[in-house]
Length: 316
Image (cartoon, rainbow, N blue to C red):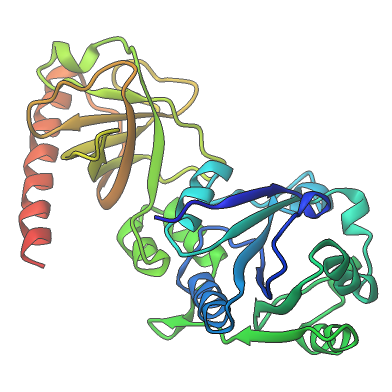
């Protein structure tokens, strides 16, 4: 994993006098399509002895453009950084999408980039990328404007999976409907949650299934239900488990969804532990049971189903 130099907006960028190759986009989810843009950026930078970076945005532009119905992000800011850090990038620029930035016209956009990044050599985007006030600029316009300041433009074709385009909106729908394995196939990695274990009510322990309660509040909520997961702690050790994400209607009917993980083996993890939970497969939707006895029987079955999944997973 690389160490990213991070800049808070274009105004604060300071880079060495080397050719700069810059991938630009929202990159929500950093899915396989985004990764193809980033890979092209890195390959070109290494070939020219230059620097490879990403310009992305803090918060989705829809928060400003349609505040009543903003797009909910697949990854929060920290999680997105963690995924980007897996690539051999040199720097990351996170630009706030302010009214002033939204007002930059298509004609003004490339000169703004060139002033902020003086050694800008090439820009990399997806083939459907739009820019400028009102999103009037397309790739053809980007090439036209970039040519004026001696900057090249490369656009990556959209990738397909199962004969349909890979897109953040498609992945959002898959996550929201519990099709997590399909979402993972488009992401190119397993969807994950990061958080610190909190002290819970110990209801799981009372029925023989102790859980780790993770502090995690995503913008985009996965489908409520039970999932097969793997858990990585701060030391890098991995454990297998069963996670429940939802409102726990049988025992408490929470007002906000909770993420609880029951590990399949012994553990010393507890409150204060920082964990990454990788969501691997959807086992069943959440539902209300007649009582604790019925719930306990179902959790026993969930645990068995998770073990069967992991056996198949290990065999490939």
